[in-house]
Image 1 (spheres, rainbow over the protein chains, first blue to last red):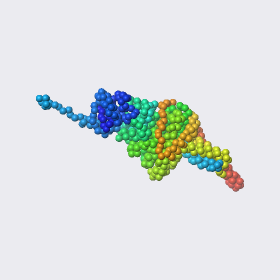
Image 2 (tube, rainbow over the protein chains, first blue to last red):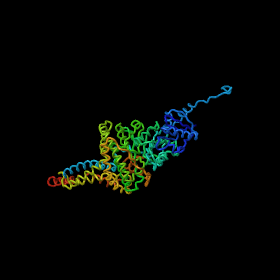
Image 3 (tube, chains in turn green, cyan):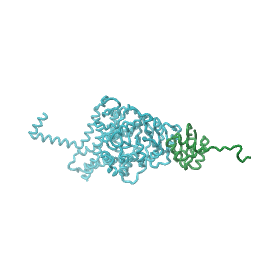
Image 4 (cartoon, rainbow over the protein chains, first blue to last red):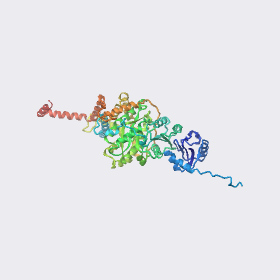
Length: 114
Length: 510
């Protein structure tokens, strides 16, 4: 169904839905310091959370995540937290779908080209 | 000086003797096989009891607090992932700074059934209690029970079913049951050295004798940090505190809320034993300090509580100076030796009273350990551990006394010093152990399984059991034996000196 990440209030949320499997945390180098001793982090089969991510960490993490096919999503923190706690993906899928705006269709007749 | 020392010796010896009497009485209760009121029935698990279907299973959240557990992390997580129960989650609350993190990062543990969650903190604020509070925060909202295991334990697959079974059976009468404490079977490396043998015996005495007696008498029972299941609603409501003995403080708060804790020796999770003196000393100093500190803070609240029974309060009073017992014994014995040197004694003092108090007080705890390993069927293998146990008790005395006084006098507790787990195993006899315990409970007259009463022959009393019981009675009476003999002889002389009485005596007894 999907591989996503979100940044809410300085925390990085990486999450999957449906048959998609969470990427290995080893994908992030130790130098990045995301899933290391000095950081507060959590992980389940569906959600990984890193708290208080620095800007440079986020930039590098986004590169890794996009390389693995993760898309950025915008979801309320409470929904992401609930997903980690109870693992119920129906609610999170609903929110992801609701957040996807329809892509505007530009007709041949319209626009400024003429 | 000699006379003052003799009075101090008598006071301290008498206080220690009160503890010794409790230990001997506990040993007699555990050995006696009597169960007239069926109170021990609460402890029982019925192996043939039908297990709950998944739809009926309450959600159980298994919490594992970690701090640098690289040697044992995989072992406990693997055991918890393989539990024979459907509706549960595993939540590791981790404060590690070592290779434990590699285990947590391992993709092998990204599983859904059961849901496995790792929560890593960047600091150790609140120590184990802080980590467990964090686990509560991320626990599934539908969880009805929380089971806690320390990292060096190996919970057997059926442990959740057993906990729920005891909850179910114990909840019928009396105060509401909030937690079930199982047996922390410190056994895995018992043959590593003399220390591990001694500590194994100590735990055996505590879990097979002392707590069994507490359960039988309806006294307060401790939630002991690991191998327990507690109702999630109560835990959510009360939360964990940041004490260095968070388990003892939780116990007090649960009892103050009007709940009770049930103990059963039939729920067991094996664990390892601290294998060096320094590790053991650090562990016990933490216990002594945290325990005494909590006693000081909760003392009057417990004694004035209208939600606690007299038996629970009495047990609390007994627990209060728990870690000062050895010190009192040593001080009392030293004062007694001083009085012997000066040859100054109270008028009612007899040599047997002095020696009797020393011997009776000295042997009370080892006797409990001996009875414990006997009840577990391990007497032949583990009796040398009693000597190690006695040595440990004396060895730890100054450290525990210092830590207890620190906890009593200082306004804040010290920090948590962790006990290193090595993952070293020398023994694993869980199946044998369980069978032995079933026999033991059958011997208590408790009916196990679906068979009719009396179908299972009781455990034979045997000469060793009788010997241990006789030794307990003798040691309880030892300080007063000469007075009892003198009294009997005086009575006999009185009877025989009066011809009429002597004739009556002769007629009665031929």
